[in-house]
Figure 1: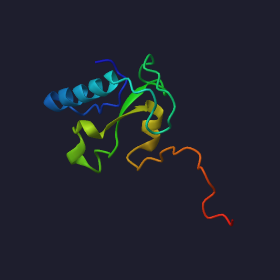
Figure 2: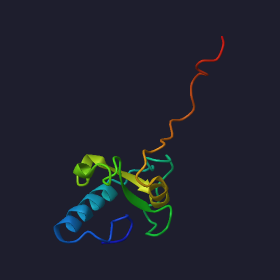
Figure 3: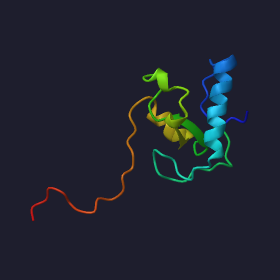
Length: 105
């Protein structure tokens, strides 16, 4: 399997095959932008390039082990964004507010 993910080295056998399939299915979607920073993902780059594709768990499997192999929990991210996030909640880019809420009228 080409390295463009963050597959833990400790997975073996059936778990590794299942995880590899999840990663490949997510990669094949070719989702344009990283779910964490909103910038385009370069699918032509390979691991360990920081801008390469990485499979990220929306709910980290270290804190939500029951979602480890749940396809709907997978997201496309840059390798660097995924590493910086770790197992913390994501700080998602929300865009520019349309109004200054709470400001005096």
